Structure formats: structure tokens, C-alpha cells
Length: 207
Length: 207
DNA sequence: GTGCACTATTGGCGCTGTGCCAACAACTAC
DNA sequence: GTAGTTGTTGGCACAGCGCCAATAGTGCAC
Image (cartoon, rainbow over all chains, first blue to last red; front, side, top):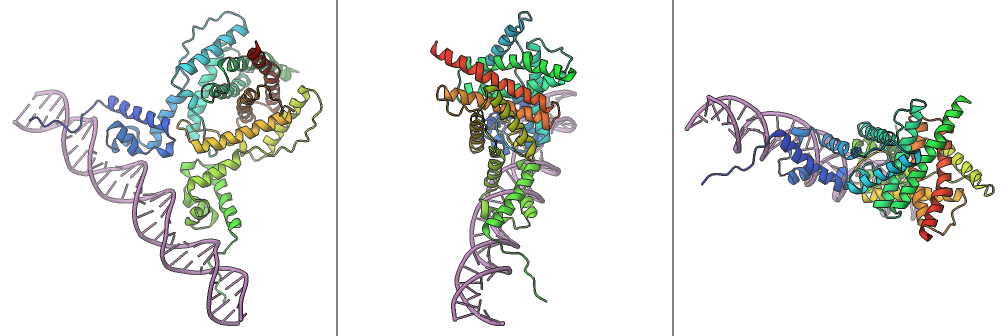
């Protein structure tokens, strides 16, 4: 009888991926403190020590999971650059809502709840994701190259992004709003920002 | 020589308050995982076991701190109910920004960063605070008693609340926006919601 | 003033979870 | 078959937390 091996030896990348996937599943299910490294190791069918070998620390593994979850889905929009501002915004909002409902609701849960106590590293990751999201929005509405008051515009859009994320939750999770209602909210608010708030900022600066 | 006591015996309420204050300080400074019960006990000048005696679990203590930090400051606005909608909104935004800058930036940090893994109890606390905030906004703009599409309006305002909080951070913490800019953003967006988005929802429902 | 009952407070035991590392065993090349 | 490589294991050591019996401030009765 061939003594079959008690465990298989995998390529590092492959094993790493397996562990990562297990961590993703569990961290999506329960908060950080209620997921033990033993849980993850069991889920991956692996000794606990291997987590540290591949990812360093439990926290490091967690941050890597968050980084991926927080990143905005690829901008695969057709990106028809033509049309009026209203039309472009309408298209952007449509794309956003599509990618929300399409994806398995990973992004929408990110940065959900916590409270107090700044965690610089975690914050850095989420701010990076937030900034990428801003780029996506600006690209999509063809305003990526405004140089006047660029920083203010970006800050406005960051705030808008939180509105959008919350509204998305009201639609998909809490079911208090319909897609049409969210669509209208996002369209009108973005329009207001670009057509009213931003010009006022520019004028106020020059006046 | 009178053998002075090694520790003083306090009224339970008083001791509890001391421990709570120490916990507040530390949890505001570092994230949950980097604050040990030993730290809190040292800060309060007390044995570690006393935390469990008064608050049960480290997590219970944490939740209590979060509950207080997340609660919106009292609505001490003069609340002049008169004036046009624009004026009322303007006053509401002013009050909001005042209370943001006045307070020692506890509220604005709440629900800042985290990611993934729903924590039902923590979520409940933050949602409760969010809902209270919605009440404040509606009161202040004299729309607390609308019964038509009440739930939708509240959902819109919840989303708006996240916009407001993020914008507040852009002003007070990140310094990317001036008070005037945030003021304008908040005023115009709230106006848009009340005068445009909400009516459209009503019309869409009846059409 | 002295002793006593009351209870706020302490200190340490036991358990769980994490990081670390030396030994081990699956796989490869010769 | 054998030796070298290295992915993988298992357990040791330590830190943090909940718990509880023992301790010692404190006010009251007399």
C-alpha cells in the first residue's frame, strides 16, 4: 500500500491564495475580533503557523483583505464621452448602480461600522480607495482634467461618495429606497455639486 | 504616624465614571485592539478586575463609550420656526457647523474607519445615533411631521448625513475645504433633496 | 473610642489566542 | 534509491481577558 501523504505541498502562490480566500470568507462574515487565526487555518485546511509564514501577522492578513474589498470595481463603462453634462452624469450613476448590484456586495459593506480610535494604517487604505473612487467619478463625467480648484472638487466628490455609498445601502440592504429613487438622489446631488457648489467656490475665491 | 490607606473607597457611580472617562480617553486615542484593559485600569489608577465588575466585559465598556461618542450634540438651536425653507436650511447648516467646531471633535471621528465583518451590536448603536441625527435635521428644518413618504425622506436624510459628516472632516481635519465651502455644499444638497428629489419620489409614486 | 458589619477593591488563577521557530516530511533532481 | 530543497507542521512562550475568593477601607452601633 502506498502511504499517501498526510498533506500536499503546494506552490507558495497557490497556498497563499487559498489562505487568502478563506480569510476573505470569514472576515466578510464576522468582525475582526471574532475571527481567530485558528478559524482561518481550519477553513483553509492548514496549520495555523502557516498564516504567519505567508502574511506575517493576523492584522497584516486582515489589511490585505480590506484593501481588496475596498477597491472600487474596474471602470468598464463604455465611456461615451459625448453628450451634455446631465447625460454624462446620468450614465455615471447608472454605471455605479449596476456595479453595486452586480458585485457580490463586498464593496458596499466596506468601511461599514466601527467607531473611534484612529487606525492610521487602515485609514490609509480606505482613503486610498476613496481617492481612486473619486478618480473614477471624475473620469466618467469627463471632469478628470479640471485644474481650477481641483482639490476642492475632489473633496466635494469624496463627501458625495459617502452619500452614494449610504444611499446604495438604503437600496440594496435596508430596502428603504428603490433604485429609481437612489438614482434620482445621486444624479441631482452630483449635478448640484458640479453646476452650483463648485462655481460658487470659484466665484467666492475670486470675488 | 497614621497608616494612610493604600486606596480610597469611592461611591460606585463615581468610580464608574472615573473608569469610563479613562476608557474614553484611550479609545479615542487608539483603536480597540490596541487598548488593553490593563491600560485602562492603569489610566484610572485601579485594579484591572474592577473594569469587569463595573462594565462586564471590555467590549461592553467599549460599546458604552461608542454610544456616547456617536450621539449627536443636543439640539440647543434657537429654532426660529419661521422663515422660508431656504432660511431654515441655512440656519440648520449653521447650527450643525457650529456644533461641529465647538465640540472637541468626538462625534466627527465616530464611525470613521473599519471595514467588513458586520458587528450587529455596534451597528445597532450607530444606526440608532444616525436615526437621532435624522430627527434633529428634520426638526430643525420644520419637516418633522411630514407623513407622506416619510420613510423615503428619512433614508435620503441618512445618506445626506454621511455627506455632511465627511464634508465636516474635509473642513476640520483634512483642511481641504473652508467653512463657507462646506456650508454651501450642505445647503445646496439639502435643498436639492427637499425641493427636487423628494417631490420626484412623490410624483413617481403617483404617476 | 472601639468593634463590627458592609461592600468596594484587589490580586492572582485559568483559559484563549497569537507570534515564533526548530523539526519534519513532501517533492525534485540526479 | 538517495540527498537536497523548502513547504509545512506542531508546540512553546507570552500577553490579554474574565472570574472570583480574599482583603481592606468605611461608616454605624454602642
